[in-house]
Image 1 (cartoon, rainbow, N blue to C red):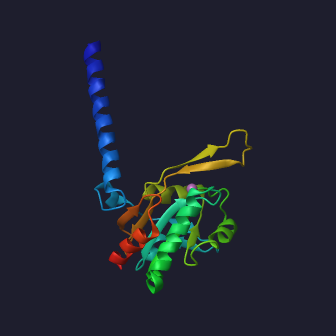
Image 2: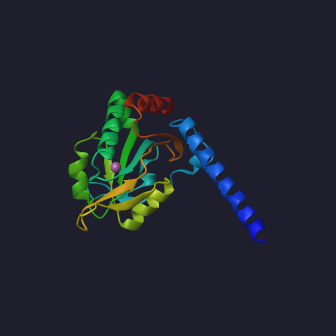
Image 3: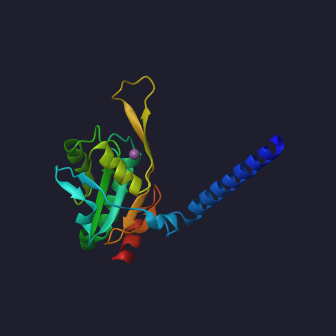
Length: 200
Ligand code: NI
């Protein structure tokens, strides 16, 4: 009995590991390119507010392509680098940049108030909207985009000193809010601009 149970558990574990390796390999191989089965489900409704305190929801952007990135303004380097990359990609699109709405959605609403976002977004492409909301509103948006985030306390720091772990894909959504493509961290702006052009 015991051995049988153990063997069954081992088989289940081996299957889980094989699945994980398969998924990782697939992700590495397909990287920033095209739809897998689960990816088509990325996106979904959200209600947030922008850096000017205006309420926004996903349906406000129908008719435009969306570039969506989740992060937080205290992020030491990954987020600013990615927002800069998106800004450069939009610059390369020239006039067509007007057909794309870049969104930065905070995963740290406790610190990222509209005022904080307004100041921060002034460093990047002028078309950018920085979005925040209640913790629940942010969680709903992140869940739709399958974005993971979690508070990461800084050793020896106070309660207000923390980082946020978060996943770092940039999502390209079509004019109806459906998933088109994603870009892994450090994708060059040229690649992003090229993919957007195909969707214009
Ligand atoms: Ni970050």
